[in-house]
Length: 308
Image (cartoon, rainbow, N blue to C red; front, side, top):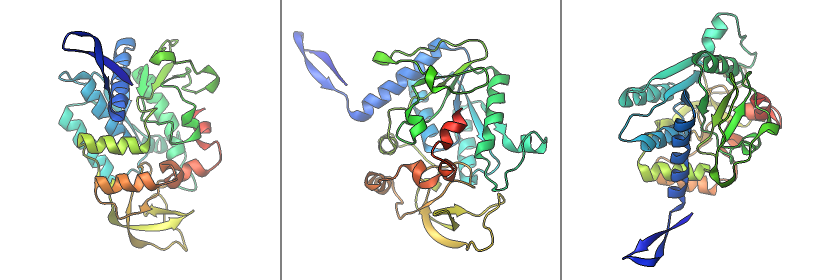
């Protein structure tokens, strides 16, 4: 992205080029402000993971010195990492934000949802999320999805329409020429908004380093008791791991992404600083979800099925 500024009153001007991160930040800030102007009740999905943390940081920048005009929404599976929940609550309190929590455990306790035999609760998030969106009448829902993460996410537009049943139809994707976004929707429908669509995992980490954004320590190398399943290091917990024959051992690991403990794996790592993590990501040939999310390995179209 290049723009031109006047130089000492001369008509020609001199070119001024934004850095790569500045261009991404500018685009995301524009998206936040566009949503504020087009929608009545937007909400930010916030899990305490790095992408949602960066998203909140961008929202704070977009509206400073005023408060962020959106509340936050977290779908709590009941199997979240304690370090991440502690971080979530601390950030909400620090910025005076309103947090909505949709609890999977509540739905299980009421008999609306049933626990899966494998203990994985990620697929159970859909109903609590969609019913919370409907009950609170949210018409725009910010998500931290990026196109580099997974094939289904690569199909998403920045503004992605969901029907009255919160279902996604790739055939209803709208063109977004010249960064013009169409937020039109019928009553009962809502739009998912992805300000980080054009970011990569490396962009996110470089931006975190540049901005000095605090993260949960789970993202950095630490000693943890884990066991191996399906080629991933999982944390033991009440969700059902480990099983017979799965040995718990203490290893130095870190997490590239965080979610439900039952399907989010750690990677062996000695990257204990931002610079070391950035170097590790730059050398990696696997996406974070491809390397550490078991729920995306159930089938070739696992995530697209959940979106539908």
